[in-house]
Image (cartoon, rainbow, N blue to C red; front, top):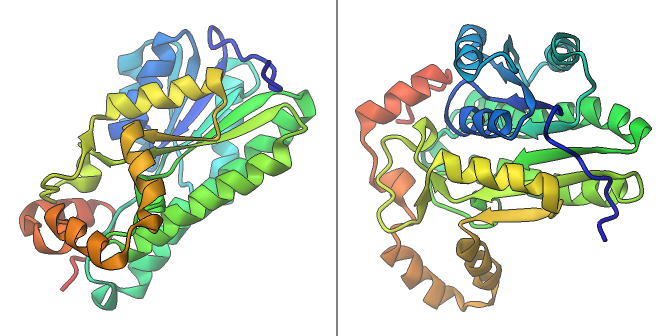
Length: 282
């Protein structure tokens, strides 16, 4: 029997960050289809409102800067006021993925990566968890990455940010275990979204945003601590530390694990980097 009180998504309030496009939008849609009220937060507030309008009356769009604690607090307050109910589920999805050689990457890009990918999650949890603990029920899902388990060339600081989210989720889950509130991490492999646009991932496994959305929604019932998508890649990642480094190196070369450095369409990648405010890496 689960130690967590059941959350009925029919009528529940879910807040999703980075929800105007990609995984976030697919996740918001999946929760709406499950009967939930959903607040979509995104740095592009107009696009979040447009996305919410496409999902129907149970969705609302809001501007949200996850790197600003006050902005995050205002988003959660607006969500509760607009939908007239307390928050049941928070999905920390917002993230950025600049790519490039570690020695070439600008300090400000690294700082932005950590601010969005790590502190955006920290702020969300610190704001959403106390009311959930007070009520004795609630659920937080942090969308991390298999890059939080598997290092990849050309993504060093992104790797660091996702390793941080995986550890943060696991440790916070332990602290919450007697409260009735659960914390889960969903770890996608490469997802067919703008985040990885312009990178030829070769034989690396790829999934669609809808696959991640289904996994996120499923954690509300399962309350599993960590979910990899696809699941078999998670099992392979767990075995990697047991493989001799020389053998692992050959397997990495076969899988083109240097794709974020060597298999890049500069024009496509530059469009993404420009949108997130990161200069192209030399």
